[in-house]
Amino acid sequence: MIRLHLGCGQRYFEGYINIDYPLSEHSVQQTSVADELHDLTGMRYPAGSVDEVRLHHVFEHFERAKAAALLASWNSWLKREGILHVEVPDFGRTARAVLGRFSSGQARMVGLRHIFGSQEAHWAVHFEGYTRVTLVEMLQRFGFGAGEVKQERYKDTYNLIVIARKQRDLSGSDLEAAGRSHLSQYLVDDSTSERQLLEVWMEAYRTQLRRTLANG
Image (cartoon, rainbow, N blue to C red; front, side, top):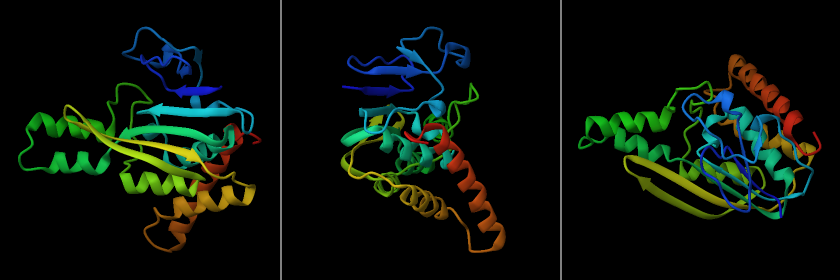
């Protein structure tokens, strides 16, 4: 079996290929437990060759066009019924805690860090806020069925875990349609400038697909 743990940090999972940035890209972490060192946005696996892709607090670090393309790419790597295991900050619950009238000052600041990232390295920024609804809908759009969804709390942080299975392959036209449908949700209106912005996002999406799609 090929099971990938992407962005492993200091967390090593037996039975997985644990993959992370080289230490030169880290500012706090001094040692690595990774089996392989890679930029996750430049990796590629053959179609239908992977049993599981697992990420803990990594997916939110990708810009939304890249995140969509990576999700499509992982779909292409996975076998049918292969598992995608994603854990991200729960934006909705964290935002409510930040705004809650009874939250302490420190809890509010920890919540803001959880939303926007720790920001001590170029990659330590969060580009997207996911909720239970938005993450499940995104997974479904890119060929996954969300089989298990859990919401957990660790100290003053709230997290969302989704364990999904690949349900269908995405053709070339499916990839284009899924990317456009997902990114269109971020448009303010149907004005020319907003449509131009969508095309910029779509080009970033296609560029990332060419890097990581199984047959890109």
